[in-house]
Image 1: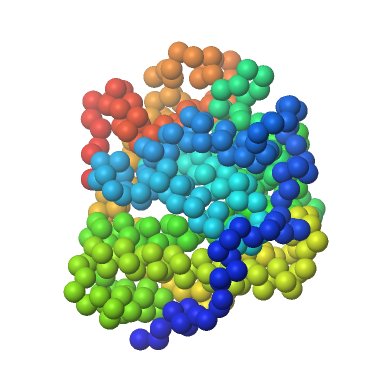
Image 2 (image 1 turned 60 degrees about the vertical axis):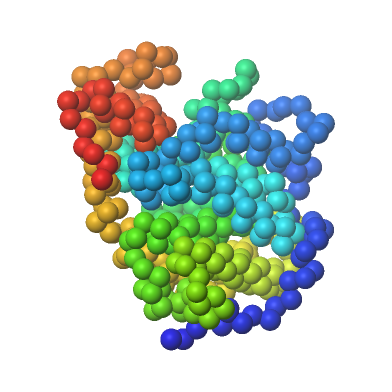
Length: 411
């Protein structure tokens, strides 16, 4: 087996053990472009710390506790949920931001908010809502995240949403890079309607790259779900440790762990493998990103935005290893019968609920925010999808039980 060269890296990281000074290209909370609705400055917290705190205290953040990552809520207590995944992404994003001299609070805030718009039952639920809303522009979880933090959260006396800073909204919307070219044309199909509508009120520069902090959060998302899905897949028995031997990165780490600890049980071997792999991937991003930043020589945060490439990323070799790992997980985990069974049931549950509310045979909660009377079809579809997307897995099951004689089992 060809082991990845990342296993024997000699890069010196000792200078990162303290708290590196903020880099000139870091987002500066004191120079924030502000909020849509002006608010007094906090005497105790930076603008980005306030954003992070508002995210943590939101209803949407708590709901992530009962939303599917890969395994639905009744599969077991130790599998990841959207909440635990987001916390893990936050830890990795902070580590990357600190190493690169970026703002840790902004990177953490973006990591914690990035999955707000996900439906119950993970991507299965998103596929259902996208199909149901096809005639109205479809459903996009990133656009739904923006709707939550700009309109749907109802916590504050003087505004809807969380009124986050421009930098947080920019990083949330451009989680995976620019959405349009300089002429406003979508780079990957049409830009979701919710994003375009908000952008007319609060220009998020959809054509540019986001901040270094947003790029840290985005790649931290990849690192977290690659490794923790691997951990969960092994825990669930969907594949065996020995099957990882074909992967240059994971297989090489496994070989090292077994050589160092030949009598270690499979559970501890898995944890040792995963923690080492996270470390190698994080260190690779730091090395690669330092090189890209030195080459670009940004003098401020906007210099990073105006580049035509990301300054935070994997090396070419690690990118190849990471894609190979994703392909392994897709084949052996995401399409496994034990995962697909609940997926099919979940899609039926959410589809039934949408149809019941759309037809008018069942009414949404008796609250002004969910009232469908007097709305046109576009508005009705949006309101129903807002309601369903905000559900947790278990509440969607409860609601289906309430409305239907038979609810498919999630197994």
